[in-house]
Length: 403
Image 1 (cartoon, rainbow, N blue to C red):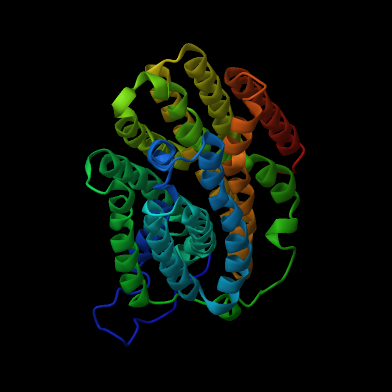
Image 2 (cartoon, rainbow, N blue to C red):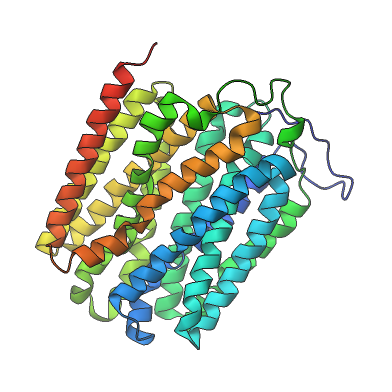
């Protein structure tokens, strides 16, 4: 991990200093972008009932975020390696705020929801590819805490965003506009703080061993372990956010928005809580990865039971277990990246990893299409079997690695 050597910016004597609490600004920026990324999740039912969009269209809007996120990741990471982490984060925060402005205009025309979600994805990709690296550069002397700090920052936004959006959608006047106001204010505040925070160490000025050895994304463990596990990170979150709550919507009547607003933060809450345990296991990466995949299997089976029995209690339980799996997998993956990547390659490596994780974010759309011909519980059981096979593959590959 890079060492923070940047002095306090001369723009203001009150600006946070690198190596002190400046990392909190990077974490806050990631939280703000994560808020914007997930605030849309509990609104799917609202747009279906008030906006006149179909279930497939709503799920398409949900996953369009991932379509924008991949280029944001793949371009944002390398650009942050060359131009600096703060530079990229400033652009990401501006785009994130702009996305919410566009989405708020969806109150008058649902057609703008598509570009709004696309912009939100690009912003998130740029922020998440550089945010972990910037947080690390500002965390002098605490490199071992960086994966957990980054995971908690993103997860806090993922949880608080849908909670606020769900409550505002249920109770606020003009809900299709009001739901986006908190995020716009949050993103602007993060933008101001990030502007006044040290940029950290640009990759080009990094270690003397720049570009020596094999880049992390060509490392055997990255290709055979990290990448195959990565899609499960956000598949678990997406199923908990977009698939399970809708399965009991008919039982909730007028309270569907309130239920969605209360349930969608649960995966993030469980993800944060489990990260303390995950951090204790981070030195035993094989155990952490396999344990996380076991939790994925359990969460998907609970989800299948929830859908099959139309049980609200099991939906809540499934959301919590899948959220725990998400949190553990995120810590596991980021810890692997910290170990494998040279500082000058960190932004690009994180970008490639995050792009792979967000493949799983596409799952609700394909699940909704497949559910037209296959029962939803059977789909979730099949996914559980696939997760178990991934665990077996990971264990087999890890056993062949030199100690």
